[in-house]
Length: 140
Image (tube, rainbow, N blue to C red; front, top):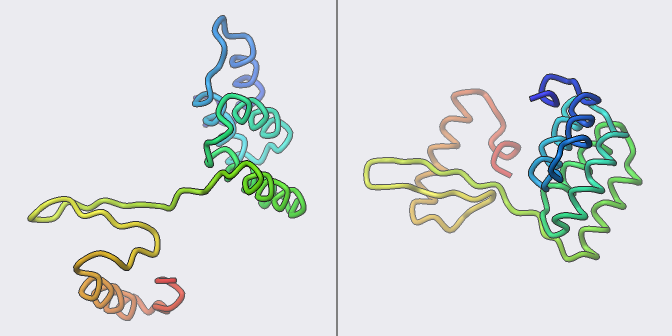
């Protein structure tokens, strides 16, 4: 909560001084707060800790890459992504669920395997046209 409120130094102090050792979830939440509030220095501390605890979790690498990208540190973005490749860490694709009449439908990023794919994408095209958006930009 401290991190979400932008009180990053206080959040780091709390994590550092807790009587129990912070787990990867705590460090990743702190890392996310650092990303939101643009604190690269504390983000680097957070990512070192979270990768030490859970090196196979892609979210930590992606968050750190976003921190670097937001501050124009593109060489570091490349280094993070290269480190992911070396560690064989794969970014998981985004996914959405929707409940509709006959059950729950799951859609992954770029998913073209759904049984009603043609109907779904025709509806999306119609929505994009109604909203005045470019469908090629939105569906790629």
